[in-house]
Image (cartoon, rainbow, N blue to C red; front, side, top):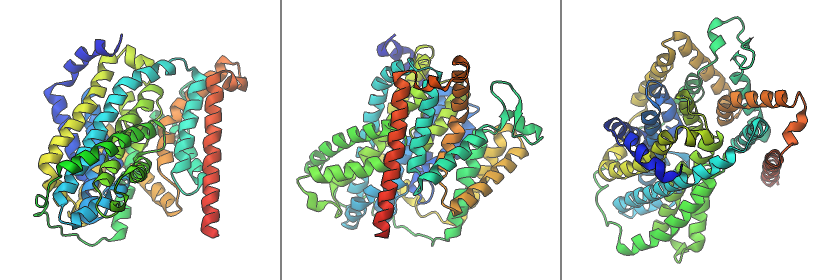
Length: 499
């Protein structure tokens, strides 16, 4: 069955009042969180992940995708208004967004960011719709050995780019793999690393671990900084010159080129929106007829950065849905949401549950459409959120963390587990260990272990199975190439710093 065979059934599943409500709620929450400097999109997704456990696959994914996509746009609001990016990938937007705001063109700057974000998001959603089924056909040719190497490849990339030290990134990924082993052995059902605690036999729930690893520790870090209260005047947001026809024409080329760049970068696991936005910004400046305007309020600069970082969103779902490799931390969490509903990545996802899968992919287009509508009418509200004082935000987030941890299994033990992970994450942050590789280790651990052991069972203990096919050799070569390039770049950067 092809794409158009699934469109009808998928549309019927997607266009329901429940899905529309959850999409809009996710978009609103994502915009609000991303607009506040210091609060990340991944924090937002972690906080609200437990709520999706009670939903079916489509509403749950629509809610999370709403947060994910809107987070790409929301970070630009604070970048433009107060010269502080709400999310790391909005840093490139800040270079021209804030200067344009200072020129009295706040309305134009926010509109350019919204239009470019929507364009990039819809472009990548269409690429997901047409490319994912084709990649899934290739994924169907992979066996257990290949899937193990795919997991290792994904872990290597994330570990390599998630900190200043390659060794620390690899160790963090190994720590995540170790924690994923807690509980019953997937092959023999024997208890492992439970230390006599019966509650650990079922393993640790990903949402509870992430609340401690990311949410609670981020609140602690934010509280340590003791930031001054920001009072922002939002009365002039609707004032100033709007985007001119000439500026709209100048936006088109960088938006298209940056959307292509963002989609390509998003497909590669471990690259992310920050790399896409900076690369596209630099490319737009080299292609522009007015390079002197960049850094001083360039329309093209804002358009390039925003379309690129939003084009990543749909592209990161391609390796996730086809191979089970999360493109970044946010979609790694979505992988767990999929698997809870019995949706395992691969070709079977598109053949046996194609109507659900295509409903989710079509829903990504709908998410970007509603993001545009909310951005059009609620920008003033998102801007006011930027100045919410820390003493109000902190207790609210902490309450959400504890409520989320408790709600998963209705157990105070889970709250204690979240606190333990928070303490561990805080100590790791003090010694500059990245948290994202731990997340990937937790998500990919069971998949990697199961495929590794099955491959050895098939080969009767022979490790030659891991070099027995062209796919295996290709993934081994890619893994070696990534490790080599990361190590070389780190060494080069260290020499430059010392010399």
